[in-house]
Length: 279
Image 1 (cartoon, rainbow, N blue to C red):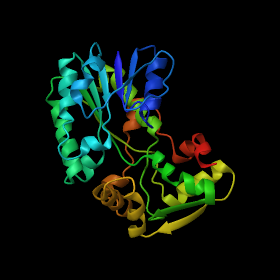
Image 2: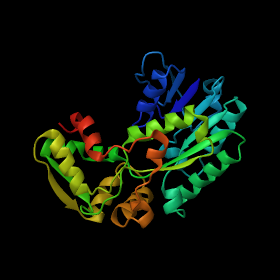
Image 3: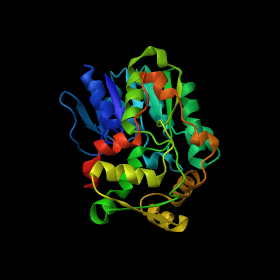
Image 4: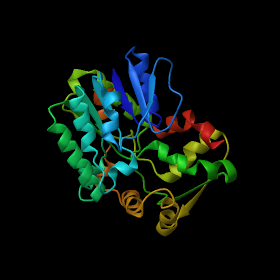
């Protein structure tokens, strides 16, 4: 059995589906009741209470570990989840980390994530670490304004990063969970090209078949909007990357190609598959 945490999110959903299609027994873990593919066991559990995961992890051979935002907060103990996995007989853990661990290692959340990576390395379990950069699905922040006003409002319109399709992260995660050759691998995951918010807007317009206007926000305007749904520190970290990406954050990684034997999908493919969110 393979346990997938964050199973109802942008990565967890396609990962759960992909694993189920291979014929493996899958347990999908989320905080709330949700629909899952036929044959998949669904469990409502809170990762902030690792002891409650004991019955979920019992009998599992592998775990995909995706942390929710509160597990990055001061006082949280995500390392306890790895301890529960080891105690429950789990053999392999694939951890969703972040590219910022390598590119901006001194922020509080990245220090904590690097410590979790180290805990996993020292656990005695088989492991792999995934470090994605920006997600194509962050464009869903613009969905309401595109639906209602046909406008994308974002800062730094002409500064881009190589955002990755979450479905590609899921595909890499599936390979790491199922294939021994990825044990001990650390994979930096990006899309195939640097793409700016202005060009993302064009891709969404093409998918819709109708014009979408781009409106450039100031940094302060963007931060005010972002802090409605995330801590101010995380908003500032995100804006630092979007406004002034380092050479390492602009690098197109070969790791998706290395694991999957194909190039990562471009943003335009993500927009076409998710166009209904913008209609």
